[in-house]
Length: 91
Image (cartoon, rainbow, N blue to C red; front, side, top):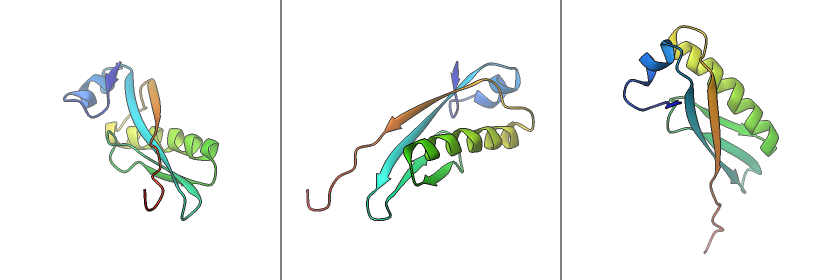
């Protein structure tokens, strides 16, 4: 697997090499939502009321963004969801 964002990832993906994508998830306590974003795929920022919803939407949107970026069907993609701890105010 080749990670999205590494040099040459677009060429590798166009040639059918499976790709790997990091998606960081954190909870916004003020807004009472979960937020997912990827440093690897520009434009991937998702908000959802539940953890399951934000993961599902991140998978769907990452496929769309990959297809738009590559101008072809998205290759096999492994998505690594990484939880980011939330710091409480005043700590």
